Every structure is written in C-alpha cells, then in structure tokens.
Length: 291
Image (cartoon, rainbow, N blue to C red):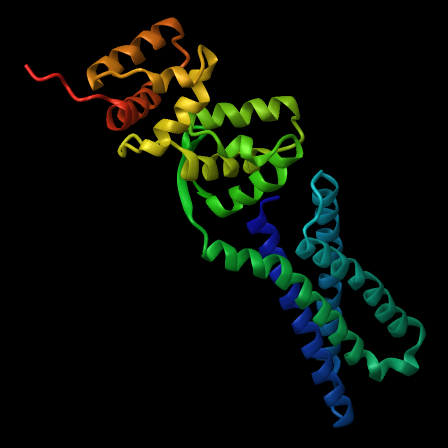
C-alpha cells in the first residue's frame, strides 16, 4: 500500500478517535444535566467500533511493512511502532471497563483521551511527518510503464540510504553518474540479485533520486560529470594514468573517444561520450597548433 494511502488512513483514524472522545464527553455532560444522552452514546459506540476496526487493519499493514523491511528501523520508526502497539492494550482495557467494570464508567473519558493522545503521537510520527516531508520534497517526472509519473526525490534518497547500504557501501553508488536508462539498468541489476529488497515503487523512487542528483543532463556540460565517467569507465581497458599523460587537441581527444567506442560499443553511450569529450577538451586538451 502506498505511503499516501496509509497516511490518509492514519489521519482518518485520528479524526474518528477525536469524534469518539468528543461524543463521550458530551454524553457525560448530558447525564449530569439529567438529559437523554442516547444519540451521543450510540454515536460514540459506532465511532469506537470504526476506530478499533481501522486500527487493527492498519496494524496488519504496518506488521507486513516492518517484517518485509530487512533494514534496521530508524529511531522515529521504532517509536512509532511501539506507540502503535501500546494502543492495543489501552483499547482492551477500555472495552473491559465498559463490559465488566461499569463502576468505573465515569472514568472512561480519561482512558479515551489517553488512547487519543497515543494515537495522535503515533500518527504525527508517521502520517504527519510524511505529509510535511512530502510538502517540502523535490520531485522529478519519470516514465514508468508508458506513463509519466511524479516521483518524490526525498523518498528516493531514503530508499537508497536504507536499502543500498545492505549490500555495499553508498560510496560505490555515489561514485557513478549515469543517464536515466543507465540508472534504471543499475537498479534492475540490484533487484535481480535480491528481488525482495525493493518493490516497484521503491525502485522508481530510487531511480528518481539517482537521476536527479547523479544523472547526466544532456542540456548541460559539466567537467565533474566528465571526470566521474572517466574514472568509472576508462580503467576497464587501461590505467587511468594513461589518460592524463597524453597531450592532445580537442579534435584528437574526440577521435580517441570514438576509437575507444569502436573497441567496445557498450563502453560509452552518446550522452557519456559528450560529457567525457567536454572534460577532455576543457581540462586536458592542448592548444591547437598555430598555422
């Protein structure tokens, strides 16, 4: 289930809890005023049933999510999980008072407010944090299964940090620069090694983050991108030192790049070739000989 959906369910849970507590407070006020509280009693009871069913449903979803995540929980997620679990015995205690210990009936608002406060803190750590981070997030438009999708870059950063580090260091990831296709292939290879490590949404978010921050922009030439591609690719055929010992004009470097691509057509794509050529022409090229 998508984070947006679970966040909306969590906020609905909180609203229903607030309604239930408000109704029981009004009901008790009506009792003290010797007025008939039937409507508020039934309203509170129905809201309580809905709250309990929705809470149990969300517990199942969160249990599946946490057990399916191989990475260690962050402090925020751990507190969220413990608070969510703590609500269960509170609900059981409240039901026991209603059914078995009616002499404590007038104390129900206290228990109800304790449950509501716990629910508020739980929702604030999950849905609240998600909504705030979503509002402040960066986005990138990617193609997915023939349609354009708006991808949350901040969510992708979290996926990369939590999931990629389970197999190797993050420096290994951040040392690369790739095109959109290159990053998709990279993430696909990682998923092939461990299909359970990323679901489809997480994979797309990871690609979005990597393309946004470590992608090749064909509209902008960048020497930093060029040197990263050289360090990543050129050592496959020869030492890196060999690149920096030659003195060539920009035209000669362009010819060298095409020669290397003829040896291995998969070594550099067109975007990578342009970035490398820009770096070599800008940094290493010797001046053209005067005619």
